[in-house]
Length: 307
Image (cartoon, rainbow, N blue to C red; front, side, top):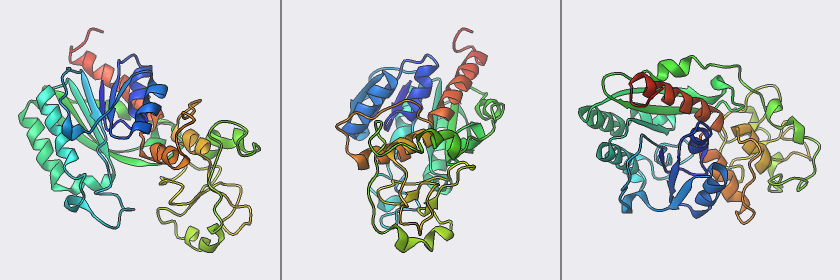
């Protein structure tokens, strides 16, 4: 499996655990360091625009940068953003390499952009059956309710990926399930249990009542809503209300566990802000592990691999 824009390996880790040989490509060296530690695969630091993919793959996956469509990005949106063309680049690699299955994910807002319709038309003409849909990770047993838009393609006339995914709906995990075990640890007691010491949280206590993206006070007995880089958009630990003098954001470790990264520790040389960013850019490995099993079933059904 080739994982383009692989980040720290949330997609690849699930496929690796299901027995796939995984290869990742990302522009960020810290992400590649983390990818290699997490997946045991081969990660390469490179710009997708500037390299040639030489090998062939059964599965190609990728999440092109979401900033052109992100609700947090208030500056250069859509075609004005320099990363806008990377969606088309992903699909051009798909039509060049012609994997048995491809999977693209991004923020839900991208689904209404003409670039998606144009790209889907292109791969359909190349021989793929394409299905799209919105996935909420908590519906499949994760502790985060983050939603993502997925485009799936299977070479040939049949694509049952979403039908198979629907068979795996599970009870959502909660924030309590993910991070209760770390509740009484002091900062630094265990790897990645670090956080920025922000002095302005109480100034924004009214904003946490709005429920708007970026202002999150987590609840113990609910899945976490989607959150951004905690260094930029304060996501508060459940024990402390925003007006509390002890209020703090969740640690890197807590962000990892909420997203579904069990036991993983970042390499020590990676800065805190980069760690947070990689977590929020990632696919939940809880979902990707299930998805990898679904892909195996689809490939077996199409007789692309031997059962």
